[in-house]
Length: 342
Image (cartoon, rainbow, N blue to C red):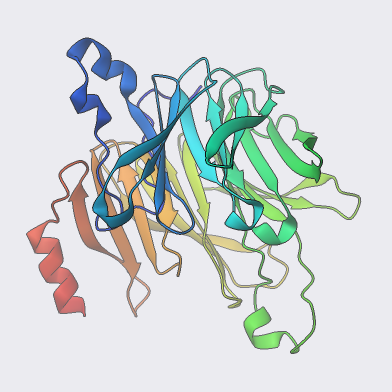
């Protein structure tokens, strides 16, 4: 089951994401019900979607530093854990998942947001949703506390095809993240003009303390390709790093055990993954998120802080920023360290 304290900071950078402290405007009796669980910027950085324990999904216009509420989407019957924007080539499409076991896909048509699809194929809380790279079409992966992962593919005319991986994680699945639609090493080896051979893959993290890698077979079925073991408690989040086609694939994971690992794979087969401990925190780590260029990792934990990490030239991961969530203040000592590094 997802924890009510779940916090997300996808693509979190303090200068880009304005604070949305809606609970501070509510009476104390209602403030606890509006705990924010996720905040996601759209592709262009002009809209912010949030979701909370009050069962709502809200969309704000955040251009020019403002916060204008443009939609308050109601359809869930429990706390909403996560939201995810689809690529804009498919229009303004947003997915949300909830404790109510439902996944709802919302779409904006002529300035009005409406529910376009509702997936009710899980038996317990749906904890994570993630859109596949747009190259594959409109495909959504959903991880649930029932242990299953479902994949929803839009087939046209309002229809969605559903594939389900049962028993993906014992006790439950907490997170899903797609591999980039870039073949490792293609930047160096790919002959010009030749279309790459895309293979759909994604990672998942669960209550069995495992990270699992999944690959679509030629017959369209999904097969477990790899188990990654290093955590000693529930894996709370996984994030497959973006790629421009360099030979190395990278995944970040975080856990209830307070540890964040960076997993790398250098071989073409994709089977030899090695973990490196980024840091051991003193509290649960809820979320990890890569910058678009994959050189900075944002980490959000139960200590109510967001830290930004960067790999130095000697291969060590260094904290370059330390932000107290909701305060927008950067630690002076870290800032000085960042300047020295530069």
